[in-house]
Amino acid sequence: MNKDLKKIQQDIQSRLREITDASALRNFEKKYLGKKGELADFSKNMKNLPLEDRRDIGKEIQEIRKEVESLLSKLRNKFSGDNSQENFFDVTLPGEKIASGHLHPLTLVQRDLERIFSSMGFMILEGPELESDFYNFEALNIPKTHPARDMQDTFYIEGTSDLVMRTHTSNVQVRAMEKYGAPLRAVALGRIFRNEATDASHEHTFHQIEGLMVDKKISLANLAAVLKEMFSGLYEQDVNIRMRPGYFPFVEPGLEVEMSCVFCSGKGCSVCKKTGWVEMLGAGLVHPNVLRAGNIDPDKYQGFAFGTGIERLAMLKYGINDIRLFNAGDLSFLKQF
Image (cartoon, rainbow, N blue to C red; front, side, top):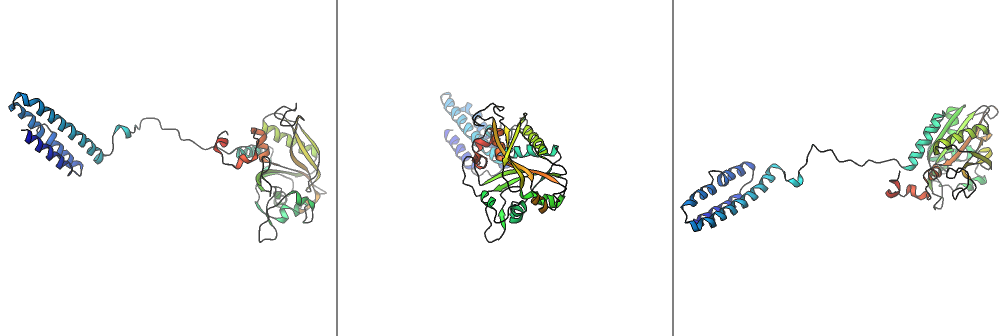
């Protein structure tokens, strides 16, 4: 009888290799493991064996059955898809949270600025980054021989006579006046380019906001009111500003504008160098030559203009001490916002 059992075992192993689909698998299982299968018949005939042989034969039958059932389980997974516990997916469980992106700190500050100026009735404008020498310099009262050009190291486009990467968003000033005339309220935000040596406070590519307001009887009081509203809204606290003379060729008079320190409320700290004031931007009343370049009569209209770096505003808002972090692509920095 032991020889017959060995023969069944060999037959099982041989037939297992021939199984190629689920139907053949079911027929095999019925033939060898079913209630009327060959292993079951073999177990029934054990009663004819001597008592001392039944235990060994019975143990061998159980080992063959376990081996066959293990092989059959693998084949079932193969033909009907892997339903093992390891790969089981419970569709009733809540889904895993997908990590979402977030806005860059410069984008956050730019959107805050757009919201603040839109609430004051200003248009949000854009201008070309590749600009003509006329709109970037000459229309802003900076002719080719003007020493002020030395203040803005410029990327000129090779093979062209008058195309530059804009050095400020002031290039939108005359374009806006030509298109919309007066009265006019507008801000322009975007990238600008300077041939700068990069360090913690200087970048060759950064962002700027340019503000322009043209109407009858515009004065420095209007400029002060708008700037105070901008700073207070951006830093979410009341601030004071003060102005002192400064030079910019496209405004007359030109002003340097300082804001009371938002970190110490004007009491003096390391950020404001114990003065209580932080230098923020350049501004002034639009030069008559710039108004004329925009086809606006300076005898009837006046205006103010200001410009500052958005990175500078963001560094103060978020306490960032190195301008290079904005473009570094460092996720450990960006994930903080």
